[in-house]
Length: 577
Image (cartoon, rainbow, N blue to C red):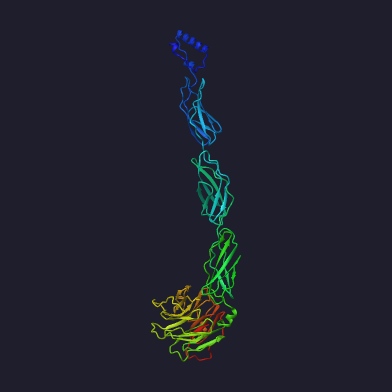
């Protein structure tokens, strides 16, 4: 062996004396034929190459290639990571690559070095790695602030520590403690609106932040908040007419999530009456300053701190009346007409004349002027006979009719009227407008009468089987078809036009809409069948008249007598207030 070829190198820590002694041992060994152990020549490991480092959540994973072991097996490695901007330094050791250095500071810049160890000691540190920054999910935000809106909550918050990686967005969750629909929303900054929530329900909200590492923990729950809006529209109100006023009754609607502070009822007229309104904290509300004898509908809305809610559907029509005027007029009297045109007046209404001895055709109906100071009679040929202040506006007397006239109705102004034939054909005169007819319809049974709405902008026709046909602003409230046990004699409407009664020949009365059920004439008391029905001006009562003039009164309709003991030349055909 050539000893001069062995060199421990510049990094050898052995002293010349140790080398000399080694050489002597080797020479001695050669002399006796024994080779010395190689371990006696080992050195610490060579310097490792610069490691590669992978950043994690408060961790650094340091990977490296084992260096030359210096002649003795490497027993361990050490990794040391330091920060250039204030992060906590970290160390790790282990038998192989990689080494995980924990508890470092997210968001701080780190470089790492590696050393290798064997029995002769550690190597020198490697060159530093490239700089990396550990990062994790963002921290939990602080408790957010919340503001309620209409079916929504606006959630405001401060961005938390981003975990070392830029926050890419925020998630907001709102849950209810009392049955409200939950809601989720996302945004890139504060505030975030969560919509689709239940007004009037209590909510708390939480926020979390996200970055490239995923979502962080949620914030503490916000204070409770209640989404709210204006109140809902109330249901259709009930109305009761008075003297120049209407009492409006209603139920409280959903308050929108905030307490209702008040209600407003408004009443408008369809035929020239002055409008009015009233406000208050509860039902009912009385709207005053209205015009008597004019038709009104009313609606109502609620208010809370957010403002006024939607309006209810309009009420049924109602007509304010002066009770003194009612008592002085038709409510305390009625007239009936016989087939020969004879007129019989009862109560305090006047008899202004008759068509007896004049009419050449059967008289089938009558109607009074608005002030009861006059009336018209109509015959089957459409001939008109006017008395008192009732003016003549025309007739079908000179026309060739397909079917006979069976009834008539006056306009609310008293300046016009309609005639109706048994096929439902309508003839309008004066200020009476045509709104339609059944003239072109094949009827199951003939028309027997008609009635007009309080506005004069519509009318109903009734057939002998109880079928109802509505035109203009007349609303259909039901019919007696398939209900009535005998043929129908006529119909009468309530004061506001929100309902009507249908009277049958056997004395039965069928109420519809807001018409109250007040009773009918008992069959045992009828000598001749019922021929007509007329309602009181208040709309809370009616009279039935039989063919012999027998009168049956119901509701607020007073009884004033009947034609007995007169012997009628022709049977009674109708009654009018």
